[in-house]
Image 1 (cartoon, one colour):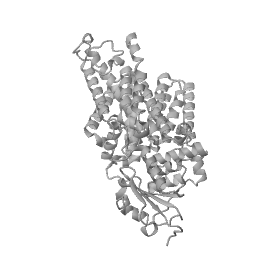
Image 2 (tube, rainbow, N blue to C red; image 1 turned 45 degrees about the horizontal axis):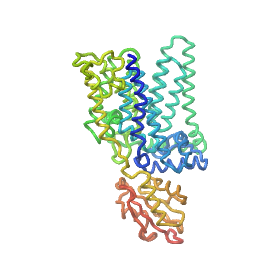
Image 3 (tube, helix red, strand yellow; image 1 turned 180 degrees about the vertical axis):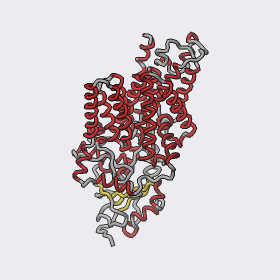
Image 4 (cartoon, rainbow, N blue to C red; image 1 turned 90 degrees about the horizontal axis):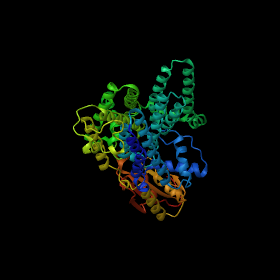
Length: 550
């Protein structure tokens, strides 16, 4: 690499971070979706930083009464503590900073494997990725795992290349966070463990092997300690999480109508295409192109790469294949896309793998031989590649335009164009937290008494999206009992009906569903009914004094 190119590449890292920040930080107050999960997390964080209530479990999963890890709340606690848990914006900003940091770590990992072009392509693709930006701009436990898994992968690769065992502890920390933030993050553990085993096997000296084994055991200890809150909970609740998991498994797990092979193909497609183009149903053609491109480049480098790059490509490619296979078995519901709900964030721990493999393949194309079709004297070599001035030609020794460089430039421009046309909106479709806060203010204006009973339709979803702003405003909120249960004397009932689940509810929102949940002979007609968001209908009832169940 010439001195000139080295100076230019110095601008790449800060440039990528600034670009990532510019695409994530504006409009944070409104661009993130707000629903039950976000309300639940803010209630937990508020209790932690304001009241000192230590969570032993993380957010609930979609599989019955099983929960993610409590470490998620401790990671967000510093941001929540700044405002006493009263500002979702502070927490979202913390998550956005994590998304920006993930870009930097992914850039470093790709660059350390295959050079400046790989780093630039991987970092740029992640910086502008609509999916990665979406993951950085709302409160949800899977939104931290792109950073944690990137740290785990980078730590493992650094341990392999430097032969310094201490880096495996960094990889263990990243793996522990990934597993805590989402139960499917356990899929990353064998990926990191595989390279650790390979590192142990290549050590010919027994003392080196013993040190590495001890460090590996230390890493497993770090991971085990991250589950200490869960262990305390289980020992004090007769292993309720284990029992819930067993109940779920006995019931048959996630239902699916697809056979294993087509399910594997669907899951693989989603894992590979999501980081580059977003939800597969929103751009099927682009998703297919992305899948063929990434898998084609990975297959080529799997066969043709040499030296450390060969090790990295085979490790990451097999890790990606393992991820798809494992998710096919343990989360078959991923074979079904549910429009209107966050879908692919569950496997965001694989995002850095996809970006790095794309970067490695792009770098190999850039280096590939071929008859030069132009010379740098005309400036063409820098024009093609959409970023040569940032260091994309570093280390090539020539700026000649070859077919490989043309293909690299066209591919990178396609990624940029797609991302530019599919950036997340500045205001979430449901209005974000400001819409929920406005709905809470309207509820408070309608009813002056406490407590306020909240009931959600369907009953498997909570009304915490509105409980949080009510609690933040100092109102007393009680969860309503099952439909048909007597109201609390003198209380008001607020029913939140989500039209996305009308099939599960059995009747439509806006009157029929609410009439079942709030019996007219008890509550009468609602004193107010309004749309808090496109899917959310809120109905407010005042219960009669001394109301009792017949």
